[in-house]
Length: 237
Ligand code: G3P
Ligand code: MG
Image (cartoon, rainbow, N blue to C red):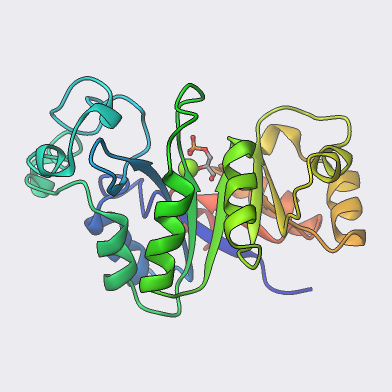
């Protein structure tokens, strides 16, 4: 059994503004070996790092992110909402993160797209960036069509199947969908020792989001979970 991997969720998001270079640098400084971030496609076909579909919660913009060019988005302040100390933080491009993070950090890139955006080429854009800036990655999404698109373009990329319900048989679902997954990424409310055991029998890892309490960390360790998403590394100290 390998040591449990701790993914700094949206960077070190309890201590710094989520999904910014400050959050990623803080995660590296704190000793994280893996970082999770969320990416979306801008109006002009760039890949930008942000969680919500709508601007406003983590910056001073408004409206849907997908309706803006990166030039417009790059003028937003993505730090002040968190603290004045971070005023002027920008929404980073995925390319910037791929270029700037140390090469040995495992990056979990979560692809986000509105279900109505069926013509979005986000999967292809991300794969093109990974060809330009190769590094260890794990691609995940709640949008399983997007995972299929990734797989059809490059079937060597490890895929993590994100979900938030207590599914009856997630492995049968993945197989029936034609998805070859490296890992399942269930929400913490849908994890059981049986699920983890079955995953391991199938050679599939289990990475659980989002883990906020030491008690949860202890239980998940006991069940030999492979990875957890945390907003601070203090819960695993
Ligand atoms: O990838 C784990 C977690 O980030 C999934 O949920 O909404 O925080 O992106 P969310
Ligand atoms: Mg995420």
